Length: 255
Ligand code: HEC
View 1 (cartoon, rainbow, N blue to C red):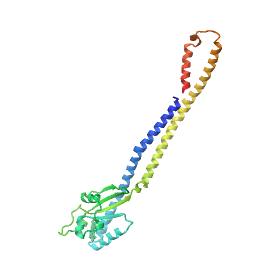
View 2 (view 1 turned 30 degrees about the vertical axis):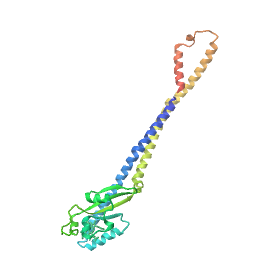
View 3 (view 1 turned 120 degrees about the horizontal axis):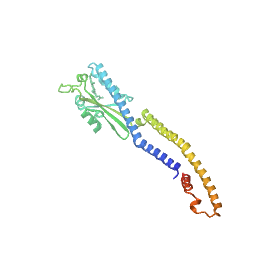
View 4 (view 1 turned 90 degrees about the horizontal axis):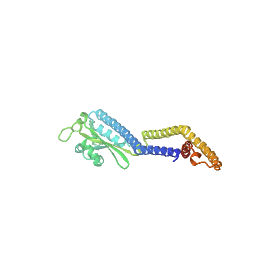
């Protein structure tokens, strides 16, 4: 096989391996990274939301109607992408509201465990965040037995739902895609940077050498033919040195 063919096979193999690595390692890793960043952002939004609720209920200064109006305004505002759920404690305090009971097992589990969690459905990433009771909450959220809700127990849930397209449209995912093409481009440039000197210093002289040797053989064969009249034994017609030179030339011609 010619050296140049072997080189092309090697280059193709390296680039194929690189694209497999990118497909099965780099892209999933980039996707995980994007997801983590988006989740981090959702979590920070949620912490900010919880702080605002804290400020509102503190500003209410014991006025329950004020809190009721504020909570109503929040749920009526469709640009605030957060829904609220009520715990059993709230249900027993204010009565059940159908749109405020946990909607599925996922939400029930978070309410029970008091551990915030993400889940992915067909179309959405969902974040369920327990709004845990702080001392200020205990001033209004008091049960029928006159006992305030326990500190740290979820008063309710805040639910954030984000379409999955938020992941692919995230700037971070554009950035990682950019990174991918830049890396791949760099690899291709490196391969070319390697091949050019190989071609210049190895392949080009070799092909000149084989062209040159072609000529030598040709001339020598012509000379041999004209010598045929003088009957020399084969070994003398082609001394050992000449035969090894010829082997080298034949070998070079293949490359
Ligand atoms: C000033 C009194 C007051 C304080 C303090 C207070 N709440 Fe409430 N909370 C209410 C009232 C009133 C409602 C509405 C009940 C209703 O729907 O009739 C309510 C409802 C809620 C709901 C359900 C919202 C809904 O839309 O169904 C959650 C969740 C909640 N409170 C969490 C908290 C948390 C967390 C704290 C502490 C950081 C807190 N509350 C402090 C008075 C208060």
